[in-house]
Image (cartoon, rainbow, N blue to C red; front, top):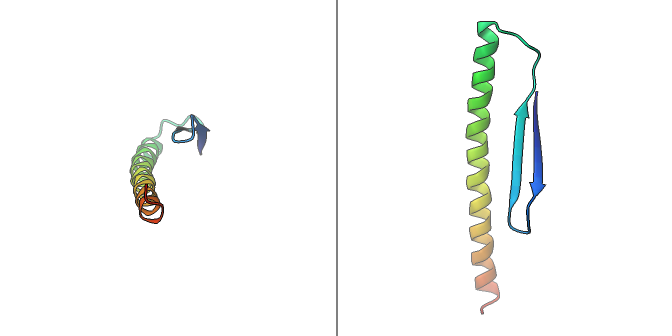
Length: 69
């Protein structure tokens, strides 16, 4: 089971903390499952970061177009 915590740092930054919890189990299958879980979460986090940055850029562009300085 994974827990994620989103902690606002300021109006533009958020700290994301994530930790997996599981019962002790040293079987090879469980080690493989935990490793794959880590890899999948790493990829999803990277995709989320890309999406957030895209939205921020587009929002800034839209604001510039609609409200010229």
